[in-house]
Image: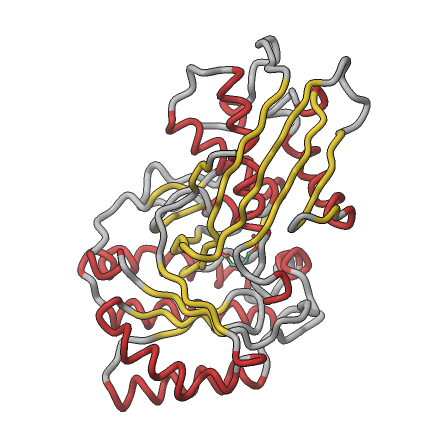
Length: 362
Ligand code: PMV
């Protein structure tokens, strides 16, 4: 599929009005996307676990205008309240996707959106939010053009979501999603995510992710700025190559259920992501002292108990604690006994690998 394949024929008849509601999950990358080319093309391929509990629910209501608007016409409500400060993000998203959805100016949209996780938790809602909105827009496209296949529907939703936020391309389906061209995976694409096409051992289909909320405030450097700093970064080329190699390495690990191999790649990826930030110019640190304290505790716990618990990080201070289903009891106990003390207000969120977005009744 190329970009051209995602353009909707504008001649089709448009529905007068309607409403669609989608719940889309967040995701946590195991191999990180960090650095991009123009048009939201990733500098390297990535792979993620789709989450289950952390999600955004978006109701998209649309009403046909008498004539095409000069500009996009929409209102945005976040958790029931009008939120004009989110509008510029949606505005630039619409601008990027209009060539693929030429009906955007034909409607007034009312967007009601809410997150299952607290707003100021430090958990990014851009992936789940852009995915839920893209699915709503795709539901309109399907009304216009009912012939599209479910495969096309999901692929284009991922394609559109990517144009809102790169990692959102991995928030449409479950359970393991790969995004970005990689030589070992013929179907892989820089344009959309795909369900990991190789064998995945059952141990990885019920993995848990407990998110420790170390710092709930705004991050000091946004992901957009962070991606940008990979241009001219002294270690960028080596990092992009490493991501390709790690994806190759993960294939056997995922197939065999090799937990030790999994830990090695996943933790290395998390620390590499943050070392890229530290080696950027200007340099910066998003981890907090408690992030490091938790990492050390996890290593010590693994050493003494032989557990397979491990961590990963996204672009922030929070720690994602990953573990297999059969270690659920001991790890939760460990978190409560030893890690909760490092969380802001003792807050953490229990999540697990999920199956992807769901359409809900309006
Ligand atoms: O989708 P963005 O632009 O917010 O970037 C996400 C980057 C990481 O979360 C750090 C890694 C990833 O692959 O999700």
